[in-house]
Image 1 (spheres, rainbow, N blue to C red):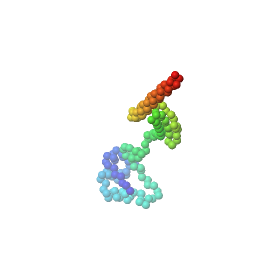
Image 2 (spheres, one colour):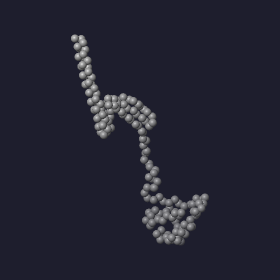
Image 3 (cartoon, rainbow, N blue to C red):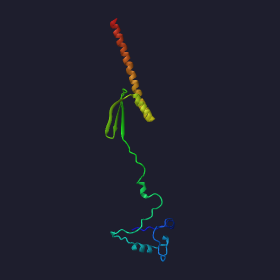
Image 4 (cartoon, rainbow, N blue to C red):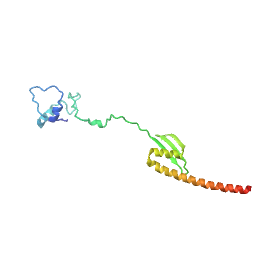
Length: 168
């Protein structure tokens, strides 16, 4: 059993809404109640420790000022639904890029070929920390392709000279 004791300020701010006390019973402030009187009040209450089946006819305690304690768990804020989309972009040293998109556990797209320029633009749009490393990979692939083109052009020139000697 709990006994709530109001301070003088709480009594004046929050007067209980109950029937007025009989004129013969003087009102005693809670600070002047002795422990003997509190014990008498506890023993005189209709609720017993055995838990009687009939409900006690006590008024609900007045809510205290401020937020109720349960307010932290019961939020009135609108909860947003999150969507898990996983976009995986992979590139090779030759400069070939592919994308895969997964929604939760379901594949939406797999093995889509993407131009390196589109990957570079998308990375710049997303964040500068992403665009730097991606641009380095793209530049390395560009240099490798330029070297390959130069080697093929040299081979083509040799093949043209060999053909000219055979015709000539």
